[in-house]
Length: 395
Length: 67
Image (tube, one colour):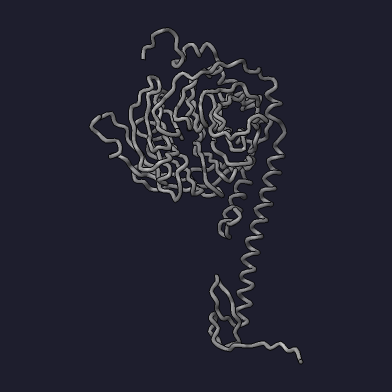
């Protein structure tokens, strides 16, 4: 028998150019079309062109990253611990829990100090946001949010309002009133709208603007009065978990950290990313500016905290120990910047000597993960919030 | 980042170029200045000065506290 292969040609009108030609079946986004051989060739090379563009962009990005590392290495002429050798070591610290704030019905997720150095706002998984007078441990205000997991809360600079949000994907502002007849929830103003959970929020220098970070991978700046989006910040490759504004003297920047292991510094006016650091090995849970604004620290699920020098554009210190294997959830500096307080998922708080890189103290007390930690505005104490439902003020 | 398409990759490349243009300073300059900042601030840091701690509102002094 003879072996013969027959080619069957269908003639008809091409689906693309409509000319009468011999047609070939072609699949575009899982839909079958009939193209003439000319249009089929064009489509094949278009696809190739698109892939080539993506691949060439990726390789360009890689080479740029390589150049960044080279530039940074050139200025790496001195180590922090070398210069810090001449500095005196710190003595023993006695830090104790001075107040315990009880009242939340579930995990405390976030807290913030008021500028008056005694009021604190805290938010919890049970949907409650409470304002405390931490001296007396009295609760001054309480609001129940319509969602659970209120992951972010912040005190307004004036002390007259608080902002909070979480799984509702929004950031809402509540004016604080001492009028017993007024219902706080009635005056609520929805300011920010994200497409995923709100992970962090902060007022800028005034009560008028709020900066937010979200699980949708973006940060955004909003006008409180109108709820208008003023600027958005794109660049993280995954959820953004934290943010911190630069101290007012240094200008309009903020730093954010995310699940993509990157810490990014942004220009608030242009929306551009000025610097990015990708040295952590896991999610960055917390970022905090150094008091002078020339550096910032980060705490991560990789069980380390790191210090980044913004002027030299590189990581200058890693705070870690082999015995610390749980993630750091929250970090903050003491007033002078010499001490770094970090709360961990193993229920402890470690106090690090920023210059020497050593741990100077370990604080026990919480009975579950420490989820949030902030030093008071005058540096006399710091407050920690935990999954054990309580907040503690330490001094 | 693996699922990014062409427009997103273009933005990433632009952002990297912008970051590359940053005016970096050598560590030999920035680190000593960081140290100096800390040393200047140390006398005022309540955690680093036991005498300041005596006036710390959080630490109980006597039996009575005026709030």
